Image 1 (cartoon, helix red, strand yellow):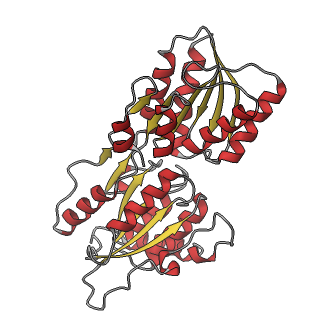
Image 2 (tube, helix red, strand yellow; image 1 turned 135 degrees about the vertical axis):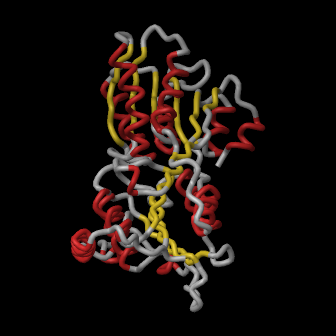
Length: 346
């Protein structure tokens, strides 16, 4: 049910925030293109709003579901949970661009949703729209990714600890005991929580160890083809390397494609260590086969946690924890099993 505004909100703040909302572009006005966000209502996926107002109205802002296997699994999980059968009137909006997501959030506020669920493309720039939501009495729940905003502006956050993921991966790499680490670092979308956390762990290790060197550090924006081009350019330059640290599985796949074309061995007993993220089932199969060395899990299944929080809020029960960190583990080619692939592959 729609939450009533607190009587403690001043009239001046309300007028100010309404002015901000009025200036925000409608989310549906984003230019067409591969990254253009799309409402599920446009796709025919969103249930029609109930006349009796019993459905809980949620606006869900996510990254492009075609971005990766992780994102597809995350989006499917959200769509399977926030259905009319489960008591929701849900609309979905997708973009890899922070400004388009923020515009979509303003539109959802104008549409008078009860809850705003956000997986932010970037960590910054959210304070104003979250303040607008709070002023409108809309509860904000973050999922998948953190943002740089005061905790008072959202009711809960169900996220992965991206730095901890990176730390786990880099600790594993350090345990391999190489004389020298010459790393091709393929980054995700710059400014995203995943990129910041996963990059930071490697950067810190390189800064504190003389035998660690970054051969090249470039973004492939989660894209396999771009990652392949980055690795091919290093191969063509003749520069030596022995580790590829890719911040998602698709980019690791692209990197391996370049190695295979150049007949450079990789994986267990190979010349190049291959590391990925997300634990796509096909990627874990590569780890199991010894073609890759390590894959770090990033758990995409947050919808049930969000659903429980919303149902409790509807009963006036605040979340017991402000932030819920998803449980995540890494998989080594020397210890992974088929059961691991079957259980954790997405």
